[in-house]
Every structure is written in structure tokens, then in C-alpha cells.
Image 1 (tube, rainbow, N blue to C red):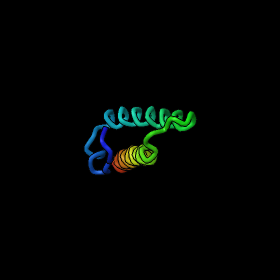
Image 2 (cartoon, rainbow, N blue to C red; image 1 turned 30 degrees about the vertical axis):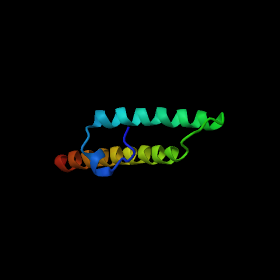
Image 3 (tube, rainbow, N blue to C red; image 1 turned 135 degrees about the vertical axis):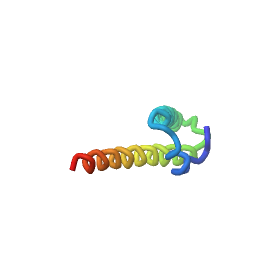
Image 4 (tube, one colour; image 1 turned 60 degrees about the vertical axis):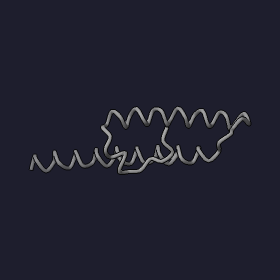
Length: 77
């Protein structure tokens, strides 16, 4: 998996690709949480990267949803 998740790269992906990436990152986040709880955590910096990537994807999804809503409401007026 890529170590950086830049907003420009994420905007280029489709909604289905973003959902799949979000699902993978959430699974990775859970695995990191379990490994930290059992004391087997090796790469603690990855936790921060994954958490921020999840936030970026959710933000982009919310922004695109708002843009789509604004376009449909403008078209109705």
C-alpha cells in the first residue's frame, strides 16, 4: 500500500475505489489497534498515517456529496 494519500490522487479515484480503499484502511486500523493492545506493534507511525488517510477519504466523500447536492438543487431552481 502507498505510504502517502495525497488529496489530488484521491480525487482522481472513483467513488467505488474510494470506498474499497476506505474499507482496507479501516481493517488495517483495527489490526494496528489489536497489535498495540497485545504489545506486538512494530510500526507505530503507520497508525497516524492510516488515521489521517481515513479522514481524508471521508472528507473528500463528504465534499463530493455536497457538490452533487448543490448541483441538483441549482438545477431544480
